Image (cartoon, rainbow, N blue to C red):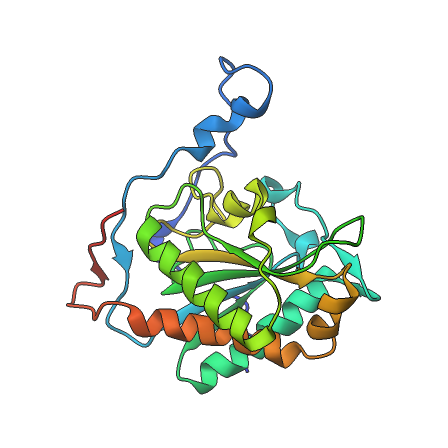
Length: 254
């Protein structure tokens, strides 16, 4: 298991000078004010170079205090069972990292700030949830609402959902998939520099509720099962990727 937090430096042309986007002043206050950032991205070619497969596993909220100014509004995450969310997320990410590396996959273990225009064969943001009422439980997986690869991203979501359910026996909590999941900041390359590049399959998984005693029994008591579910889902997805034909990517319809 490596201690690498980011991949090798991106090419010079992969830099980003986007200012943090502001909502156009012509839009009224209210939910529609940010509609411009929820429009689908143009279809992009699948990033799938003919090399050893590489995956980014982000431990949500980890090192959030080191976020750049454009991500200054990030929050520290949920609490439960005497643990902060980032501790649980990092533990699961490290365990999944080990399993993936044993299977021959290169893994970047990423904190809350992802590298500028990050690229890999798949990116998975790992989180745990919280419910103030303490009643909700289960896991959920989502892909970007403005995906440049909706069909491929749906395949990643399906692979993760199937494998995680099988490994953990947790119920699915799809009814609570939120806008914050679907429009997660690391997916939003239109608004942020520190975001995953278009063309990279992306998903976010909420692995269970820290505020649920039943879910904590898994997340804290049997984290290897949760990590195995994540790793198995990623491996199933990578196995189904098309064989690269050269040139670094394969065209994919959005």
